[in-house]
Amino acid sequence: MQSSTVGQQLNGFTLTYMVVWILVNIVNLL
Image (cartoon, rainbow, N blue to C red):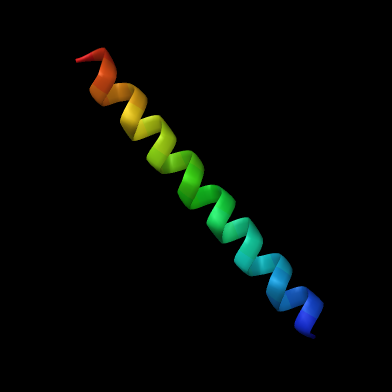
């Protein structure tokens, strides 16, 4: 159960990081 929760948190963190990275790149292009 714990390992599954940790995996979900890690995936959520990775997804959030990717979204932020994409937004930063869009701002840099403007």
